[in-house]
Length: 398
Image 1 (cartoon, helix red, strand yellow):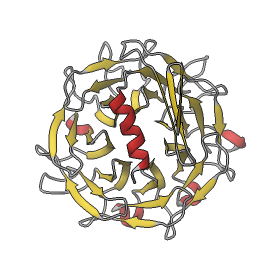
Image 2 (tube, helix red, strand yellow):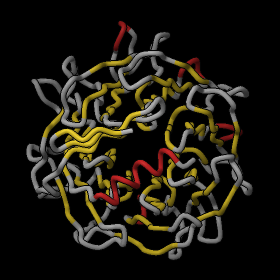
Image 3 (cartoon, rainbow, N blue to C red):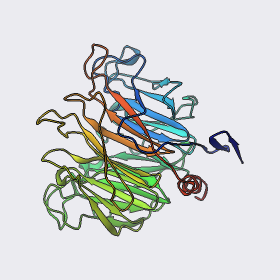
């Protein structure tokens, strides 16, 4: 079942590869900066990031690949940031935005292309970027934006389509081979809820964000919905202190026994148990107006990571960006920024955590003499034996 070699334990079967290396803890300087080997201006590399099954995946949705404007691409790396593999859609076309979303886990990589053929699509790959399977919604329509969000875990793939049905939105569940589609919608959904803007899967739960939902907290206060792996609704989450235009549900994550929901206009992230009971609220200790704290969230390896892509560091109006790391109870904040960060980088636009790594995207970072190329940064964190077993259990028990 597994093999221990030196400081790394690797477990493999036909479904999943988990590789956990020994770690040195959270530092204040990143371990490695990732940039695409063929990066060009306005690629937006780092718009989306994922970590799982021993791989890091970075989306570059504005890449003009295959001589097609905004066709998009994604890049696969080992956990140490080496061995880059670039993937593009076999049917790449202009303005598809392949790489707008990425996910990795359970031995698969999933990439969203939310404007493919005007309806949207998602693509499934093996960990080496081969054996492409394209999935589209069986009832897809123009401007559904299927693929704007994707997630993989627990033997399932989830794809969000926030534009479906006058933007009330929907999400679709598939097996790992892209078959056995199940469509889910909010039990109380209405126009412009944007259900499916964000999706997550883990710990036997599927979570879908609907940041435009009007509820008892107010207009566009936002909600997030919990489902089991068969698509049965388990509960609806709203913020305990919600008000108008909080955008609760703009980002969602699930793992390590917790659900985390970002509320960008509230400058907060909310911690819930797997049944949707709120157990904590996180705000940055140095929060300021319009930081967009909560625009991205991740939870795994007993850590919560929250992005604040518009954070000004150190002066006003520079939007360099930051990310914040917390324990599962929301305590012990550690703030991280890019060592070479500059105004307008939007570090924290995307975040991911797992397998002893934190990955943060800065999709407007300029380098190599070009602007808006984008980058992603890797931090190494301590992952306990318990965290390691949680990774295995999450992949095997469902």
